[in-house]
Amino acid sequence: MSTVSNSKRQAILRAAKAAFIAHGYSGASMEAIAEAAPVSKPTLYSHFNGKQDLFAAVIAAQCHTLLGTLSNAHTEFYEPAAGLKSIARAFVELVYRSESLSLYRLIIAEQQHFPQLGELVYGSSAEPVLSQFAAYLRELDRRGALRVPDVDTSSRLLFGMLKGDEHFRCLLGLQPGLSEAEKERLVDASVSLFLKGHGYEA
Image 1 (cartoon, rainbow, N blue to C red):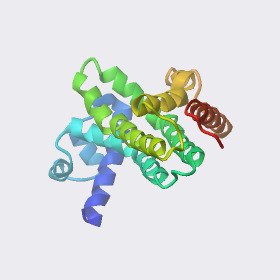
Image 2 (image 1 turned 30 degrees about the horizontal axis):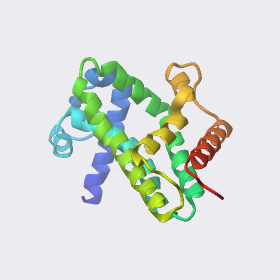
Image 3 (image 1 turned 30 degrees about the vertical axis):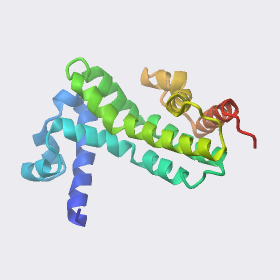
């Protein structure tokens, strides 16, 4: 992809994210997104097949940093505590971000009207994250750094601990987010429990 083409794609994603958050999935039009980008409608459709495809790309872009952190963690097989903390921090930064919370609320609100949206979003965000993390845990188990008999279940356990009640409270608007100190405490506690539960000895 050329630099100009990638620049236009990023502009479209920024405009689309703002439109979806402001107007909801059904209220955001491709015409308005193209105008805000600003690009022509043919250019918009040359990058994305339609609104569903564009929404999935917005969600995938949100996960970009986390996926990069997961890839980098594969070089830290002999330091599982450091690798897991890097992954946990990236995940916490992602899911407690205000725009991520807004998009999460939007997905839930639109689900009954667009049931296929949930599958599309899951396939572009949670699925690749869980798949990469499971591969990392599988290799840690193979090398004897951790004991992970069920990598799929363990993958969900760590991310589940990092969300839990804190994330639910943020989604409900009971608190605006987490402070840096709260994030670090959550990461430390979750990773510590995860390591102990998987036979890690420092």
